[in-house]
Image 1 (cartoon, rainbow, N blue to C red):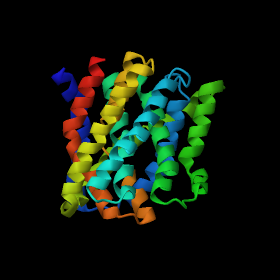
Image 2: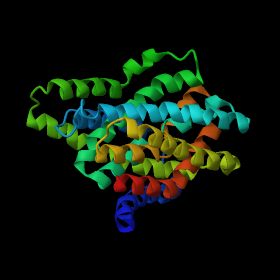
Image 3: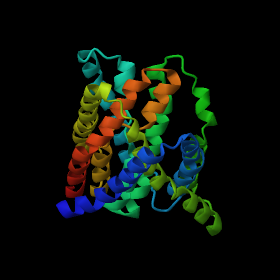
Length: 292
């Protein structure tokens, strides 16, 4: 079991380490890279995965429901911690709800469960992002305009992907290969970008980051343990749910906090320290996932 877990996590953390050391040496401007990832690579990957035969929109519905329960339940469990820490819930709670199912969840799902685990994890990535851009934005700013969501290429690729999954119209092979080739570039790009982001940790908020790095996976795993017995999941779906639950806060939390000017420095520390601490919780999540 230990050898299998190491075989899963070492490639992921190795690529993150490459991004970290390269980022420290070069100090690149990742703005354009991140825009390409979010506006080109991610939509291509979402459509490719959801429209593929490996994703069953009806069979994976209980897993998607479970992921929504983890997101909402983690927020409810994290709210009292924000009050105890005398922190603004708008700063602390969203990073506890929205985890790194893109940067880490996707490659870990592939390495742990093969291609069969990839499509369902993409669906969880999509659902989490949609909740982040709607509910997450509303938590930070009750006057947030959701019209921006309709301008997001990931939303349109999600709609198109789910329509293809439901109705399964014919897709030319050359077009399917094109989407897959473009989308396959997202995972290594996101891992490298995460490594670069880790160079910007503000150790002044390290205490809050450590607490957030504990609360996020622990509340997620608690919710997964509560929900899994009632969802009628297959062994692989149960494993994916626990893997999803153990993931650290998403880098996207920092971008959203920066957009709404909601203490982005604190959110960055929660996100980045939490991702460093994932070396503890990812193996725990994988151990539970692989035993199901």
